[in-house]
Amino acid sequence: MDGLQRGSAAIVGVAEADLGAVAPDMSAIDLMAQGIQRALNDCGLRLSDVDGLLCATAQSRTSGLSLAEYLGISPAFIDTTILGGSSFMFHVAHAQAALQLGLCKVAVIAYGSTQRTIGRRQASVREYNPYETPFRPFLPSTAYALAASRHMHEFGTTREQLAAVAVAAREWALLNPAAWEKKPLTIPEVLSARMISYPFTVRDCCLLTDGGGAVILTSAERARSLKKPPVYVLGCGQAITHATISSMPDLTVTGALPSGRAAYAMARLGPKDIDVVELYDAFTINTILFLEDLGFCPKGEGGPFVEGGRIAPGGGLPVNTNGGGLSYCHPGMYGLFLLIEATRQLRGECGARQVADCETAIAHGNGGVLSSQSTVILGSEATI
Amino acid sequence: MAQMNESPLAVYQAHLEKGELAYQWSSEANRAVFYPRVICPFSGSDRLEWRVSGGLGTVYATTVTHPREGNPYNVALIDCDEGFRLMSRVEDIAPEAVKIGMRVKFRVHRPGGEEPPYPVFVPVAPTLPSPVSGGGSGRGPVEAG
Image 1: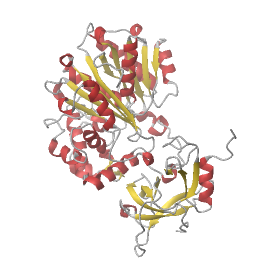
Image 2 (image 1 turned 90 degrees about the horizontal axis):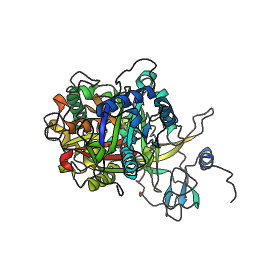
Image 3 (image 1 turned 135 degrees about the vertical axis):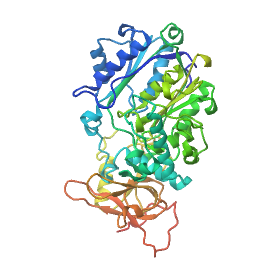
Image 4 (image 1 turned 120 degrees about the horizontal axis):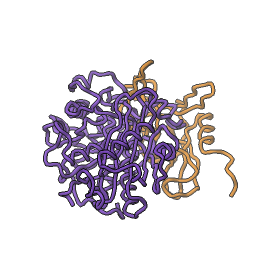
C-alpha cells in the first residue's frame, strides 16, 4: 500500500486467548483482555506501554470503548474497523501507518468471540436484506456455495478436490495441540457428511468455536530490543468488492487478486518467494480461490492443485499449518489467528508442524461473503 | 432539494404488488442498476429511471440449501436479460435440477400475511424457442408465469 514502508513495523507479541469452548459467561472482551495479557508476556511489554488499540467483534457495538475501559487505558490511537473476518489484516496496515506517523508506539490488535457458548445467532445478528432474506440463504454458507457452484461450472472443480482442502487442514490440525479437531478425516468422510448447502457438507465448512487472541506491533527499531525475533510487516494490501453475494461482480475471482498484488508490490516479493501460506478457509472453496488469486496457481487450476496432498504436511506448499478455520478454530472472525500462526512459523515455534527454513509468510484474510480481502506479508530478519 | 416521497424499496415492492419485476436504469452509466437505490453506483448520478423487466433471465449460480428441519430448497443468482443480477430461487422443478445456464422466467410470489411479494423464477418451457439473451428494451410484456 502506498505510504506504508516495507519493514517499518514488526509483530513482536502474539497469543491466543482460550479457544474452543470457553468457561460459561466469559465475554468477548474477557477473551480480548486475556489474549492481550498473554501477548504482552510473549514480548515482555506491559499494559502501560500500550497506546494503540485496535479491535473488532460482532458481540460489542462499541468494542473499542468496552475494551479500553476494561483494560483501564486511554489509548492515543484507536481503530475499530470491522469488515468481517479480514478486519485484523486491515488493522495491521492501520497500525503500521499509525506507528510510522507516531500516532502511537505500541499497537495491540485484539479479538474475542463466545459464539459457540452463546450461539451463532446471538453472537452475530444478521441484518434483514429485502433482496436476499426472503430466499432464506443460510449465510454465509449459501453464498460461498454459490461461488463454488460457479467454480465447478467454469473450471470443472470437483467435490473431491474441495474435500482435499478439508483433509489437508485436518492433517495439519493433528500436528497442532491447540486444534479443536483431534481425529483423522478422509475424502469419503467429507463427501458423506451432513449436507449444508450443495456442494458443501458440514466438513467443507469452518468450525464454530469460541476464542480470541491478540497481536502486538511496534516500530522495527523498538522491536529489535524485545524478547523474541521481530516479524516484520513487509507488505499490506486490501480490496472490497461487494457486501452481498448478489453484488459480487464475478463469483470466481475475489478481491484477493488486487489485495495480493498490492501486498506483493510493497513487499517486493512474489508467490514463489513465500515459504508458508495462511489463508482464511471459512469454506473449502476459499483455499482454492485464494491460492489462485494470490498467484500460487493459475485461475481455474486450484482444484487439481490441492489434489494428492499438495497443501498437506509433507506436500509441496504448506498451507494453513495450524489446521485452519476448518479444523483448528473458527470463532466467527478468524483472520487474527492467521497472523498468529504466520508469526510463530517465522519464529520457528511450531514444533511438529514447523515449516523448515521459514523466512516469509503470507496471511490472507477474508470477510463477509468473499466481500473484504486483506493480505499481509510477513518476514524474518533475513528479509530486511 | 425536494424530499423523496417513496423509498427505492417501496417503489420496487409496489411494482411486485402489480406482478412486475422492476429495476432501475442509469442513463449516465448506460446500464441497469439492481438492487434499487438513490444513486447509481456506476456514475454517482441520482438520475435513475424505473423500468419493468421482461422477466427473462439465465441462472448464473445455484445451490441447494439443506435446513436442519424441512425440505432442501434452491437458492440461485439470476442474470436478467436487461443486465442485472438478483438472488432468487427457481421453482416448479426439484432444487437440484436447477442448473447454471438454464433459461428462466419471472413469477411473482405472494407469501401472504405481512410479508411483501418477492420475485421467483420458473424454467422457460422447453417447447418455447430460446429467446435471444442480453439487450432488450426492458419494457417487454410481463410474463404472468
